Image 1: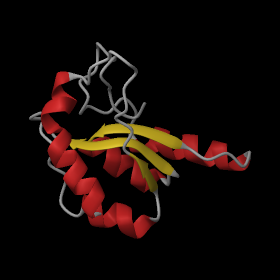
Image 2 (image 1 turned 180 degrees about the horizontal axis):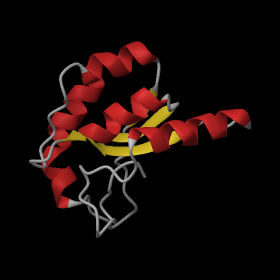
Image 3 (image 1 turned 90 degrees about the horizontal axis):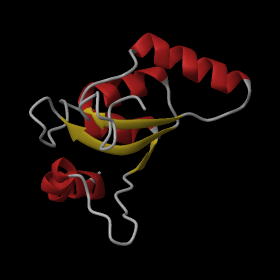
Image 4 (image 1 turned 120 degrees about the vertical axis):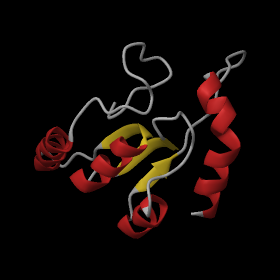
Length: 117
C-alpha cells in the first residue's frame, strides 16, 4: 500500500504511506528471498517512488494528483514503459459493487493512458 486506496479512510488515494527509502528496504529484503514486490499505487509520488525502489509490478497506477485528477507526473508513462515494470490496472468489481467515485470520474483518462502506453 504505497499510497492510500478507496478503502483507506486516513490517507487520501494520492498520498504516499511509505517513503522511497522504506520502499527500497522492502524491495531489497524481498529480493533476498527471491520474492517480487507489488506496489499499490494511485498517487503520482507513490508511482515515482515505487519505480525508484525497483518494484516488480504496480497495482492500479491511476496517476492521481493532489487535485484528485488523473494527471501523470512528467515522463511517468514513458518511464514505466522503459522500466519493464508490469502494471495491473485492476478496476474490476464484485457483483453489485461500485468504483470509488474518484476512480469512476477518472476512469476514462486512466484507461486511455494505460492502453496507449
